[in-house]
Image 1 (cartoon, rainbow, N blue to C red):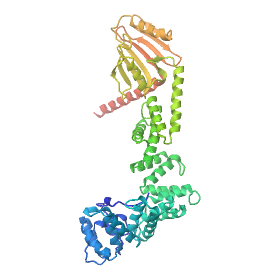
Image 2: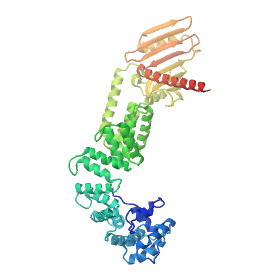
Image 3: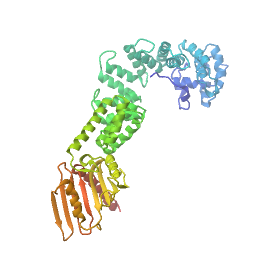
Image 4: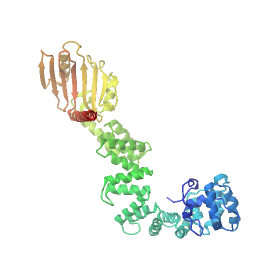
Amino acid sequence: MVSYSRYNAITNQGIDFKKLVKSKGQVVKSFLLGTMLLFACVNSVFASFEDVQGAVFSALKKKDYKAAYNLLEPLVEKGDVHAESLLGLEYRYGKGGFPKDNEKALFLLTKAANQKDSLASLELTSMYLNGDGVPKDTEKAFKYAKISAEQGVKDGYPNGMYNYGYFLFNGLGTKRDYKKAFNAFKKASDMGHSKAPFYVGLILEKGLAGGKKPKEAFAWYMKGAERGYYRSQNRVGQAYEAGDLVKRDFNLAVKWFTKASENGCKVAQFRLARLYVLNNSESIQKKGVSMLFKLAQENNNGAQYYLGFSYRNARGVPKSNERALFWFRKTVNNHGGYEKYASSEIEAIQKEKTACSSRSVVTLFGEPLICALRDSFSEQIKKAGAEVAREDWKYFADVYKSDKVLKGSSQLDVFYYKGQFAAARYVFPSKSESGQILKVEKLVEDKYGHYSKTESDESKGVAYYLWQLSDGVIIRVFQTGINSPVLLDYINPKIDDKLKAVQKAIEEQKKAKQQGASSAV
């Protein structure tokens, strides 16, 4: 992108004006200074612009805009190139109540640029390149870019040289020439330009002006990154992530993607979010998912795909094939480069569902328990007539009133781990009709056959029946005492074991905190 400065964003920056201007009075060290000088108040008795710099600095601090015209115009009539340039810019932008006049601005800027004024030629470069106030003309834009480059070298001002390199690199208004572009970018970089090192690195990495030089390319990218240019920061992050220009280091990749993200780089934001989602820490995964949501809403195709990936694999969010399919289908429809991967995931989910149904034995509410997921399973429970007592993904379990679903029962608790079914428990109140446990046992036996194991003690009112099904699901019906409720459990051990491990860890953390608090008293 061409470097130029809009002059409505350069006041009150705390700039040391005297350091920006040569001792001879030329306004050449910074385009920012040039635009600031539009607002200068000078004394018309002076014969040239060089005579009035002190007055300019003083008036600039006072923001005396309108007097600029009265004192610059006599210098313009004498042919002072700096006054022509500054008054031209004042007409162009019409700041401080000054009348905006594009025709006068173009006349004065062109006159100053033809006298090798870097400020005027820089402004004309932008105007002709973008068709801003003039018909778009890349050849004229290149002409003025070359002028501003040549004069900028003399004045110690890098933007003109950077622009010149940009035109040569992209073949704008001239024949594409990577070698000349390389030299221009290198000169601009040597003069302190923040963006130029990126292009030096790019030319070296791709071998556009000779052989490929990855190590040198990385050094240039790093130089641009340290100067704060987001594209350089992003490329350094990519290099550390992929290990293509430097030894792989994910921590450094995160560091540079973070810097680029903070500077507004959407590519870096996506790459950072992806690294977070792939991290082993659940809290970091959640941070990545949050970033992906924002990018997905802006139709970032990669973010949409990785949101689907996150739901499919329970990375920072509970597992949900329905939500995964939603984002994978969005990815396919948006055609942003990830549709091939998303289509494969959609096909895999469908095959997985078919395979699960074929090997499943135990179903509840029409859902195979070995692959039931929270979002779809909860919907089926409600469709069957259960009344919600609590449905909240912040908790491990959802709770329902179940009397309309299973006669004699009062409550159904369904437990999940990262959105996957772990266990379900029906509760039959202790005051329910006598022989309730035998009726529940008979209910299960009629559907799944004779139990695998049983234990009982009639004197204590203890009874226990267990079914171990071929798909791995365990069903148990039990009562722990005469006045105790009858419980009917459906358990998916593979997921339930993970849930219990997490619950145990949480309990241990609570105990540790309590012990720490009591010892501090």
